[in-house]
Length: 157
Image 1 (cartoon, one colour):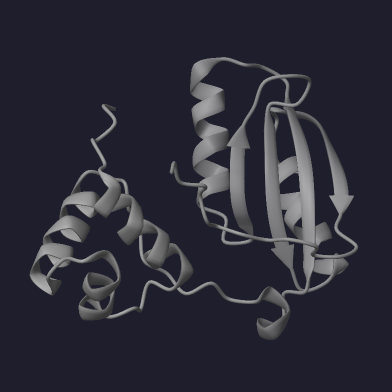
Image 2 (cartoon, rainbow, N blue to C red; image 1 turned 180 degrees about the vertical axis):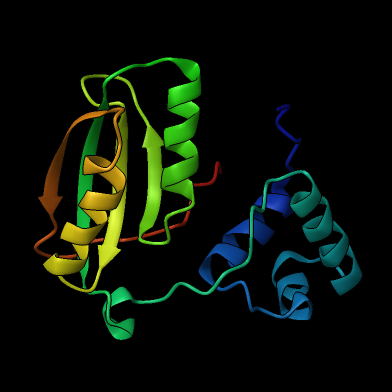
């Protein structure tokens, strides 16, 4: 995918939106010295180009009964393309899986999972790992503290 050209106005708009995507376009325009319609056009262009992937509310997991964050390394039995794609589809379709990365190294995938309790995680392991003929092994790391969680991407100066 070709990388879209972003100028200093685009980067300034992105910086504001990453802090608070509910900031009115009029206020963004005042901050970056553009009109609100110009800001709107730039945001729309960046959305269409895939620079802005979505606009979401970041929810605190513990506030909605999902206080446990778990990191899981998953190693597959076979690295055939169709089996890797099937694993990607399964992990992507599982609501508890917050993030999924196909990685190099010993593990094939790293998952970030949120659950209500260890019983819920155990049930999930039965579905995702023990119920799959293609999972060789998995390793679980339970987060003891959320030191930093962020979705902002560092922007060039």
